[in-house]
Length: 146
Image (cartoon, rainbow, N blue to C red; front, side):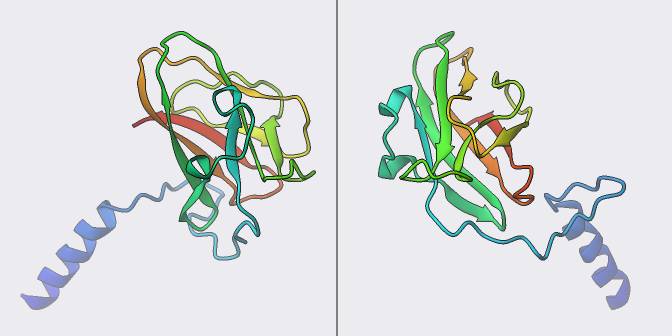
């Protein structure tokens, strides 16, 4: 009975995992290197400054987030994810298209100067910007509500 209970508990706990299996890709990436510098959400709403309250925080290896309050529905907010000095390799804008939609990640180019991401919220409120740097050669950016 104890073995059955332990197996059932393990099954239930694994169902709560946030990892997603993608065929052909490993779900656990043990060699993810953390960023070696602070990164910031920098945009028209920060006057493009690296403000302390817009510093991205690590959520798990290679995943960084920050929250922003967008108060004007329909307004196009422009932003980038960059270090304090706009350093090449850490100045991230869009790769091929910068228009972000909720919960749809798009590729970033961290060697760009003018490729700003844009996002037009349909409702005012708090949004989370996620910077997925698990694959530093192909980082992703996503906006979600909350």
